Image 1 (cartoon, rainbow, N blue to C red):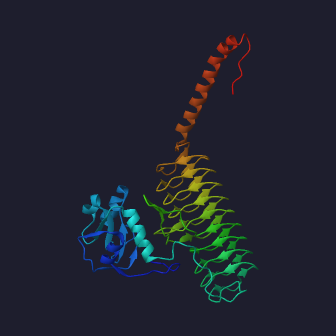
Image 2 (cartoon, rainbow, N blue to C red):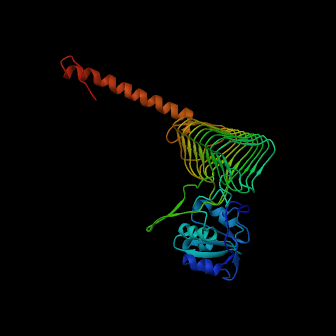
Amino acid sequence: MDDVRFFERAGPFSLSEIAGWIDGQIEAGDGDRVVEDVATLQLAGPTQISFFDNPKYAADLAATGARACVVARRSAEQVPAGCAALVVTNPSVAFNEIVRRFYPDAARPARVWDDAPAGDSVHPTAIVDVGAVVEPGAIVGAEARIGRGTRVLAGSVIGRRVQIGRDCSIGPAATVLHALVGDRVIFHPGVRIGQDGFGFAMSAKGHAKIPQIGRVIIQDDVEVGANTTIDRGALRDTVIGEGTKIDNMVQIGHNVVIGRHCVIVSQVGIAGSATLGDFVAIGGQAGVMNHVTIGDGAQVATLSAVKEDLAPGGRYGGVPARPARVWLKEVAALQKLAHDYIAERRPQEKADGNGHEREHD
């Protein structure tokens, strides 16, 4: 991450040090070379380390600018020239340990206050522009900034170094952490922005927590309904595009990117690293799996489950979600089969019961 304002970063560390943490073997690289940070394959630069564990991202590995990459033995030959390979048994678990060493405090909720005097509600280092209002019981953390015309309502918490733009409304009891928020944004009561994503490295020893060091970026004119949760990114940002409207009780996982002017209805769940294009509409209680892409203008019916990428402009429904015309034909065919089956059974049931139909559960 180029912007790590919300976390304290340790290091730099040599490749030899890093290899020692994860019991890794350095191949095609100098152990004395220094690594300053962690990053995804797509974003990594010449002073950063990344990892590769999913064949879906082979193209990203081939094009990465990382100084080093943690890989399994089977993938070592795919690491491009100029990038050192750290060969390990389990790349995901090993990389989690590397992130934890670089960001030792990121696995727990960060402090909002830095030793401010008791009784204060706005930290002395925070900037509240003229015309902004912080109501009683609200807290504005260290080095945060609140733009002109914004209202932070009672009981809300604005975290350390959070930035909120102009003419926003932060509803009662909302929490905004690790986030950069644009202008004219509305958060309704109980909104939760910027907490950990649900990330764990699974192994025979248990579930190791993966530190989440990304941010939440919320662009202008977004509205977020009551008790909706938007997790911060892991190694990159969670992004909510301009003008998007999100209903109550929606869950948006880490690394999700939502385009401009989308509409997401109540109780939708969007899993980590999913991507929605512009003007996407998703009906209530639908689910979107991780790493799925939904194209611009697509519409997903209520109670659907999106398991694969959806093309732009289409209408989809069902479990799993498929083109609406196919789904509706399948529903009609199933209803006809059920109707025909009942019609065929009814005469036999009357005969078996001497003219009286049987009762069935």
